[in-house]
Length: 75
Image (tube, rainbow, N blue to C red; front, side, top):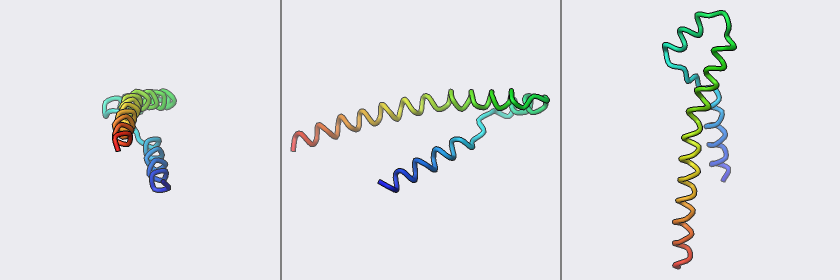
């Protein structure tokens, strides 16, 4: 259990430090003086990227739990 929590912690930490902008967006946003706009765009990209992964993880967990329950009741 500790191993899973440690893995989750490091995965979440790596997720926060990732820059998700494409090369063209980064070049345009870094050339300007307003760095808060670049950070806002990056946060928006990270949010849009995270939602599908979270949904797939929740659905996968539900399917795993459903199949795992059905095997335990048969035994």
